[in-house]
Length: 313
Length: 316
Image (spheres, each protein chain N blue to C red):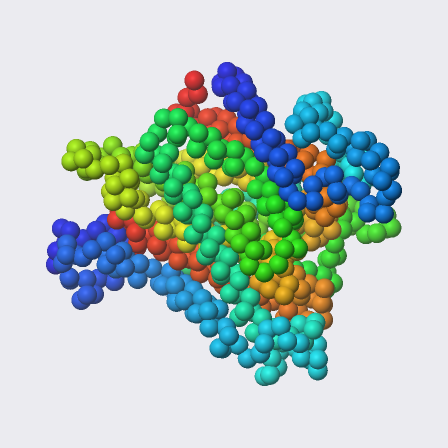
C-alpha cells in the first residue's frame, strides 16, 4: 500500500474505512477522484447529496409526477386533511398541497441556484481582480465590500423587494435573484481576494509570468483552479442561504407573486388557516428545512473532501 | 488603545456617510418614490402641491439629502408621514420593547450555547456530540419564521399554553408573569438560531485549543479536568466567539423584523415593517441609518474586546 502518498485526510482518526479499495496507489488519482474518496467517508454528506438530488429531481419532474394541476382548486375539498386522494391535504381553495409543493420547489430551487450562480460569478470576479492586481483597485473593491457589509442587509432586502412586489412572472423572479445576489456576493469576494493574495506570490505563478503568460491567463489557468475548493464550498452554502432569503421575502409578500408560488409563499398562504389546516404550513416548511439542511451538510462534506490537508475523518 | 478607538470611530464616519447616500439614493430611485406616497389620489391639485412643499419633496434630491443629513446629525429624523410625530419619539417609544426582547434572547442564547459548545467539544465524537451536531444543523437550516409558525401552532393554538402575539394581555393589568408569558415563544424563536451557530463556533474553537501543548502540560502537572476546561481552554476559545456574537448583535434588526412581525411585538422591527407597508420614508431612512450605526459600532466593539481577551494583539 502506498502509504507515503496517502493524504492526511485518510490517516486522520478513522482507519476503519481502509478496505480493499484503498489499496489503490493514490498517486495516480486526480483531484476529483481523491476528493470523492474523502467525500464518501462523510456519511451524512452522502445522504444529504442523495436527498438533494431527489428533491431537485422531483422539482424538475413536477409536471410529470405531480398528481394534480397546482393551481386548480378542487371545490369539493377545501382545507381537506391529508387523504389518499390528497396525500398532503388541500389548501383554502382546494388546491392539492403535494402538487403545489412539487411546483413550488421549482421556483424555490430556481431562485436558490440562480442567486448562488450570480453571486459566485460576481463575487469571484471582484475578488479575483482585487487580489490579483492589488493597489487602488483592491482598495476600491474592499471599501465597497465594507459598505455592503455594513448595510442592514435584511432591512435593505425588505426595502428593495417591497418596491418590486406587484411585478409578475419572470421579471419578478429575476429581480429577486438580483436582490439576493446584491446582498450575498461580499463573502466570496473577500475569501477569493485572500486566496489570490497568497497564491500570486507562489513560484508557479512567477514561472507562468516568466514564460510570458498574461494576467488573464494567469488568473483563469493558474490561480482560479487552485482556489476552486473554497468557491465550491461557499456556492453550496449560498444555495441554502438564498432559498431561506427567498422564503422570507415571499412569506412577507415581497417575493414571488401569485399565481407563481414558491415554498415561502405557500407558507404565507397557509398561515391564516393554520388552526384548522396546519398541513398547509407544515409541508412547505419541511421542504425548505430538508433542502437547506442537505445543502449545508453537503457543503460541510465538500469542505473536508476538497481540502487536501483535511485531518477530519 | 484610546488612539485606536478614536481612529476607528473617525474612520466609521465616512463609511456611514457613504451608506446614508446610497440608502437615500435607493429610496429616491425606486419607482413610486416619496412624492407619490404621502399623497392621496383624491386630493385637490392645490392640497397636493401644499403637501409636497410642506414635506420638502419639491426640492432636488441632493438638497433633500443635505437637509436630512443636517437634521440627522442633530438627532432630528423628521416627522413620520403617518401621523406627523417626530420619528425619534416614535423610535423611543418602541425601543424598550425591542431591547427587552432582544436582550433576553441574547442572554438565553449565550447561556445555552456556551455549555452546549463546551460539552460537544469535550465529548467529541460521542453520542452527545453527534446529537448536538445534528440539532444545530437543523437549527441553522430552519427558516426562522416557519419555526415561529410551528411554535405558535403547537404551543399557542393547539395547547393554548402561551399567547399567540403581543407584549401583554389586552386590557388586563400588566404584571411580571403576564409579560414573561408573552416573551417565551418569541425569545425561543430568536435564540434558537444563535444557539445553533454559536455552539458550533465554540465547539470548533474549543477543539482547536484542546489540542494545544499548554493544555497537555496543564494536564501533565495534574490540574483538575474541570479547571483545565473552564480556566485554560474556554478562556482562549472565547475569543473567536466574541467576534461572531458582536457581529450577530449588530445585524439583529433583521431578525427582529421577522420575529416582531409574526408575534405582533410592538417594537422597532414591527415599526419598520409597518413603515415599509405604508412607505413611510422618514421612518425607513432613520431605521436603516440607525441599524448601520449599530453594525459599525458592534464591529468596532468586537475588535476592542478581541484585543482585551487576547493580549498578543497590539493596536498601534
